[in-house]
Amino acid sequence: MLHLASEADQGSDCEDTQRQTLPSGEDREAVRRQKLELLGHSYTALVHQIRTPLTVAGLYAELLQPRCESDAESKAALDGIVNSLHTIENYMRNCLIFVKGELQERRNFTITEIVERIEASCQRYFSRAEYQVIRTEAAVGSVSGDLSALISAIDNLLENATQAIDDCPRLSININCEECTLVMELSDNGPGIPEEMKQKVKQPFVSGRKEGTGLGLAIAESVIRAHRGVLSFAPNAGGGTTARIALPLAPSVHTGNG
Image (cartoon, rainbow, N blue to C red; front, top):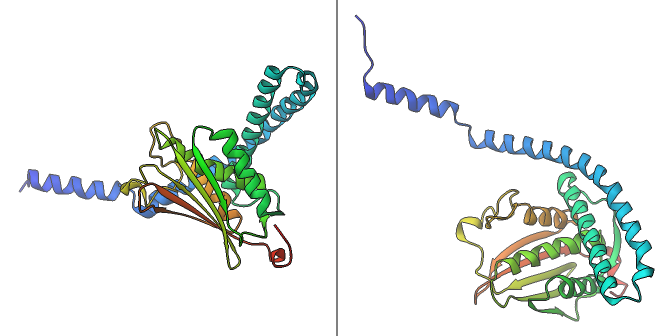
């Protein structure tokens, strides 16, 4: 006897087929890792191609600097070009850290150097924001790593904070040492991290902004992790968010100043 399947049976078969064809959580994670690995290989090759013309552009800019010293407008324009080239170079370096998971260079630098670079970045990039850099007396010592890469990661966190605030952004950067750890807390007066983003805010290609790439915080965290540090976020009691960076101090800090 010929048996005709009912609509209910057919629907059940379709559901079973869908369950078999839909990738599991582990499969999706494996695919994501494969895509990131492919992206990493492609990006590494691209960086090597870009670095040569970028270096040449920097050399030409340096040659022009003496000619622009007497003209304030030309000097300001050239300084903007040089700063932009440095920004591109820093971003490329940090992307390589994100891809490879390790620093390209490592040296000891003092907390004073970190503070000076943060203050310079605030003046250069975040002039529309009201900011303060507070360093406690305990914040003395050195950190081992890549200073330019670390500052670029901090710049990225500050940029994310200011982009989330439409009017009167306020930034507070508190720098302290707790035992053998440098702690930097970057607080803002923004709207805070949406609840649905809290668990995945540091994942690559996840962004709360339509025009965002979703790579900024992922790259920043990879740079901090390459310094053997930890990046975390917490809501402020009065609104806004605090990004907390904890970095191990270099062993020599106990005998030196910084």
